[in-house]
Image 1 (cartoon, one colour):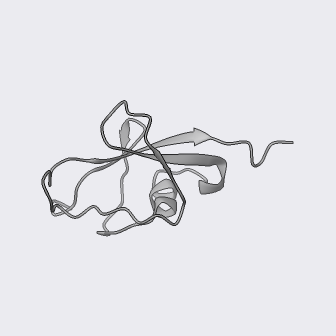
Image 2: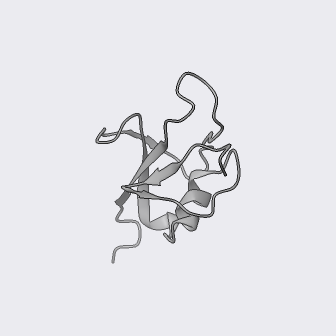
Length: 84
């Protein structure tokens, strides 16, 4: 896994991701969450509001570009899809 950037969901590393390009759905499942119960935001930096991304959004965990060691950060916000 040393050739992949770390994936952080909320404040915790997501275990078990060994793909270079997992989807947001796969990341949530690896973190033990039901993808249908939250809205997901991709953050540029820790503490950002982030940009809402769909569950089929592909995350690039390859160590390339200007900041190859920078983690990929996601934030999960519970939604109301299953309410009532």
